[in-house]
Length: 185
Image (cartoon, rainbow, N blue to C red):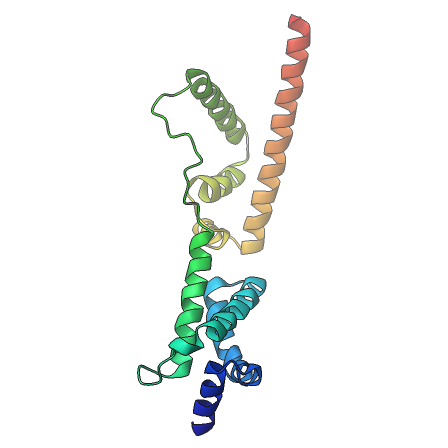
């Protein structure tokens, strides 16, 4: 404890050796906190470095009467991590949220949906059910395989096979559409 007080006093006097020793003592625990919050090793390392730069710059603000050094350093790290996580979110609207709809887009979407439903109806019942559970009902593969009462590997193969068949159906539809366009010309 006494050694810690000396290190902190030396840190306040801008002793680099004191910073290095404090880093060695506290960095692993602080890194653990940062990593659990941001879940990214590279970003956690960068935030840890930034945390200790702030500790260096603001060491004169640390008051041992208000709390332990670790708590002070932890709060700096936590705030820096939260600021990093917040900065990743979109704060500026980039989408067009206008109230007017483009009727041609709506019609095109309805035709695409109609075609997709037609292609889905051509699938075998177990393939169709698998796709509906995952893509339309929002279940995970683990939840959906239990719903269908089949092994997880089997369920995943259903999804893979169904997607292959849909891709082939769409490819054939596009080829027929191109042929039809050429005939009309």
